[in-house]
Structures are given as C-alpha cells and as structure tokens.
Length: 589
Ligand SMILES: Cc1ncc(COP(=O)(O)O)c(C=O)c1O
Image (tube, rainbow, N blue to C red; front, top):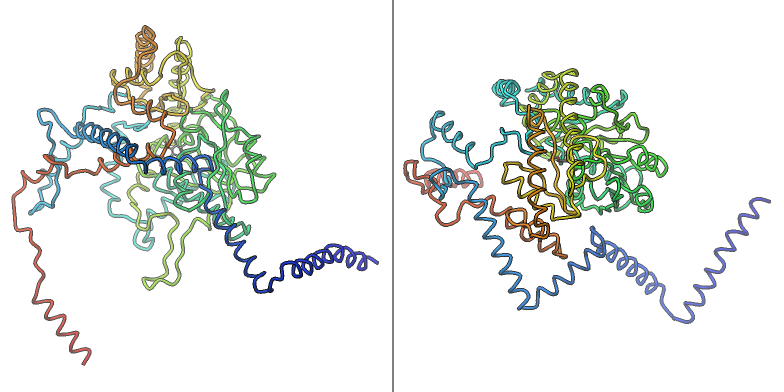
C-alpha cells in the first residue's frame, strides 16, 4: 500500500520531466551530447560568475571597476598619479624625520654587512642610538595601547628569561622539551581562566592576527572536510579586527560584514541572522571590538550559532586578559567565554594585558575536533613527516618562556590588582570625557578602550591638538573618531587627570573656531574618508609600506661610513668547481 503510494509520487514528479525532455528533443532537435555539453558549460559559467563576485561585495566591486576604467582616461590618470606621487613624497619625508636624531637630519642606513663583525660593545652602543631615535617617549605614559606594562621588574625578568631560553625552538620537542611543556601549561592556564572544560585545548601563537588566521583556517577546513560545505564564508561584525579580512584573503574565503547598531556600537543580531547562509562556517563576536571598546552580545550570537549549527569565535585578543579578572576585581562583565554554550573558540593575547613580551597570544577551542583542522601535516615530504600546529615552522621558544614567566610573575592576585587599576582609570576617563561639552563617547565601553566623537567639529582636530601635547591616540574612521586604549602606564599618579585636562583645554580652543579644517598628520585620515574608491587609499598606503623599507633614497645610503672598507667581490672558487666537475665526470663513466 505504502510502496504503491511512493511509486505514484515518484511518477508524478518524473513523468512530466520525461515529457518535457521528449518535447525539447523534438523542438530543439539537440543531440544528447549537445545537451550534456550545454549543461556542463552552463554549470561552469554559473560557477565562474559566482566566483567572480568580489569578496567585499558587489557595490565595492562595481566602484572599483568604474574607477579602474576612469583611470584609463589619460588626463584623469595623470592627475591621480601626480597626487599619489606628491602624497608619497610627503609620507617618505615624514618617515625620514623619525630616523633623524639631534644635529643630524640626514640619517645613514647600514646597507651592507660590515667587513669585520663589530664588538658587542659597539653593537650595544649602536643599538642604544637606534632605541633613542625619534622624539616620542612611551615612558611618558601618553600612548594609547602599544606598551601595556613596561615595568622595570618585569623587564628585568624578561632579560633573564631571554638569556636562558634564547636558542630554544618548540619545533624540536626532543631537544627543547621544556618550552613545549611551558606552551602546554600556558594553554591550560588560559583554558581554565576562560572556563573551558577538560576538552578545551589550544595553542600559543605569535599574536592576535595569527590566532585569528588559525581559527578561520580551522573552521574553513572543518566546514569542508566534516560538514561538506564548499566555498565556506565567514560572518563578522564590521568592527571585528581587520585580521579576519586578512585571514579571508589569505585563505581565499568570502567574508561578509555585519552592520552595528549606532546606539550601542555592537553587532546587529537581526542583520547577522539574515546574512547566515548554508556556506557560513563561522560567526564572530569581539570582546571588546578594537574601534569603540564595546562588547558584542556574545550570548545572543552563541544562540544563533547553536540554532544554525555554526561555530562561534570570540575575539578576546584585546580584552581577554582583563575580562578574565574583572569579576574578581569587582566589575561586572557579561558572560563571554566557554561558560556560554555555543562559544567554540577564543583568541586572547598574552602580549597585551597578559603583559608578556610581544609575539604571543593564545588560541583556544572548546573541543579538539576543531583544533585538529588548525594543524598542518605533510606525510610525504622527503625531508621527513612534517607537522606544525601554527603558521610558523620554527618558533621562538624564548617568547613562550617569556609568556609563561609573565603569567607566573603576576599570578591571579597580581592580574586582579592591575585589572582593578586599569579599569578604574578607564572608567574615570570615560566619566570625565562624558562631562566635556562638544564631544561624546561611543556606545558603552565596558573594558579599557574609550572612543570619542563630536557633532560640533572635526574630531581629528582634537587628535591633532593632543598629539601636540604628547598624546598618541588611535584615529578611527567610518565614523570619524579617536580612541584611547588605557594601559597600566595610565594608572600612574596624575596621568588620567592630565589627559582630561588636556582634552578639556583642547576642546575649548577648537570650539572657538569649530569650522576650521584639520591640519597636521591626521589630516590624511580626514581626507581619505572622502575618497569613494578605497583602492586609491590602498595605493597610498602601499607607498607608506614601501617607505618603511626604504634605505636607498639619495643621501641616505652611507651607512657604512663608520665601518672599514674591504673587498666585496665574490669570486667563484674555480678550484672547487673543477673538482666537482671532475668527480661528476668520474661517476658517470
Ligand atoms: C580585538 C583585536 N583583535 C585582534 C587584534 C590583532 O592583534 P595583533 O596586533 O597582536 O595581531 C587586535 C589588536 O589590537 C585587537 O584589538
């Protein structure tokens, strides 16, 4: 009975298709070969068209296309090229100023190996010169983020750690088991701090960016290998760190950016849900997001993840090592870690508020089934069976040792005490800024980053004025804003008061002439936002990146004037060549 019904239903679908085929064959008179070939070609064209959709969306792609075409118009191209060249020159000159020291505005570069190696004393003296380049002194406690601790005792500890572990490399567990043990312990300590179960696992990476790239790789490969998803995509808030875009570019994946609420600066959950597709292999939330210091609603994103069976990565690179201690320091924080069902991975940078030396972060997974897809394993290489857990091959064991030492140095109570100081300073800054007429604070920052904007004047003018007073803040865009990332340096006596006073004074002056245009280095930020084609901005930034590596500019190449000259020609050793040829001849006889 039931079988008959099934056969009938199948017939109801198949029969019309068979009729359609017969009809098409009669009308179009196509050979089966042509039909098969045509279908294959159509599939190929559709798939090519799909792959041609730009990863950053159709609108951006169209803008780029238009601009590319417009740049073919000679007069337009000439104008653009001359503007880029002028901006590039200005950038190079500004950078060059960083390399000048007192009484010498034409810096020399070392561009060749010294003939004789220098003595340790000479090298250290030279190193001291380099460390004194530029006029900016982070020790004055006026820089946003960047140096998160920098205390004397910790520096002394790191110096000893370096001397003990300088040559270690976890790529060789048999030679350096100690650093491997330290790495495993760092991961376990972090997993415990973020409420991971016994199944929680992870790795130490070289920084937030690497942690993020590896998380994206793990979820891409998990999606492809386990869930059978082709062309997996990632879904991130627009405020998520640019490292996700970098990961998507490197891993050839599509990234979709979810808008935020203007009131809270948190990702919009309704929009995020509407953008989920069968290809979505990963959701992302930040705690907090770098730009405005606001924490995405991790519990609600986790619910979306559970509903659609999609892993959720929490980017706690910036705030992780504060959030973990905030409850104990007396501050409320929303649950964001593995205590939230649906959170499957967390990145947390030990080299930020973990106060470890630069070059360390932790990537944690709730379960080993994800971490396995982070690994790279090559079993057929003539150089041996090769496997790495992170992007690098060899890794500096000394950084792992430094990270491990920092964790032990502060301990639970040390971190709790410092977190209390940092969050208190941040809260005082936030409250003070909210009291200054003419500026406003974005959203409700809950950790250490406070972003400010203004409806009355160009906020970059404030950044410029504060720069002149020695403050180095972060400039943000879309919308124009600046932020301060409060560190241990700002908890020193008087720093918060001075900052608030400097902002108040600067705003008072700016408000005397609110329409004035911004000048100085930050002006580039203001103008760059007006350029609709972002590839042009990209071109300028490329010049900046090139300039960072430029040692060849006229007048800068004279780096070895303090080194002796010597014969630098490298003549091939003919004798050895003959010998080699000779032995080859013999072997082939
Ligand atoms: C939220 C967030 N994620 C990731 C990163 C990237 O970290 P890193 O610079 O160590 O690669 C940062 C850096 O500021 C960050 O703030």
